[in-house]
Length: 373
Image (tube, rainbow, N blue to C red; front, top):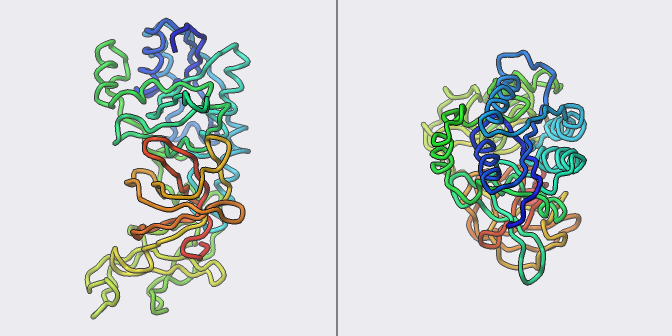
């Protein structure tokens, strides 16, 4: 991008978006910072860092020499992201709010706001890249160059209009280089640790948070033979593959079958909503935790149309290695077949498809090996 443009940067208070703003300013663009406030229900709590983050973002803007505006998207967030998040949990699935937040807030509400400010582009501190394919003219979403930080999984719902307006400067860098730049230009947040919590939950205990919003009925925890081992506190509070917080650590079984020894840990393997029963198994490689196929719905393709059926790679959760798969069309979505079994594939999470470094898009996992949650 050679011509100088007006670029609005989402400044979160973190180091990645700060270096993003600096790099764009260095390239000669007219840079404006926006701090997005997406949650305000309990902003004064010990877990919500929004106020601290804004102070950090403002300090960064001061050092870089750009204006910053504080914009409240909390109402949009509650309607478009949080309500859907609760609906999915109530239905026994495990949604990914970061995927929804990117599609509905950062690259929709924020993008619209930036365009009203006269922006030609927006930029965020995500580790991903955008390029225009010389042959097709289409904009492509690519993995970030730092494989340990790549965030294309969370961005897979971006469409052509959004990708054409978006810049990801730190996607071209490794995290160590981003930290080095931040220290070199003496950014006040150069050593600030990365946030790990979901934006509206922060670092608070997850179950405690969900408790406020979701009705829950206790029920039995049963093993793969139908024996009741304990009581669960409500199916919404558990996710497939979960090992901690089951309350059955002391239950030992002599001659445990199908991959589980006597002292093997227990894992959540299935949720039976009709019977309000949580099914658990012993051993990481129990057959109930391994899947060869899934069907995804609520599909979004970056190119605006589905890729041709055939061989690709996919992630069924963030931070997973790409897994070889074959893609077929399915009613209201697509089906993936995996030659190698995938572990704890979870309805509600996203199945994201890749062709090499190019993120093609994806959908929300609806059924796994023919089983709904």
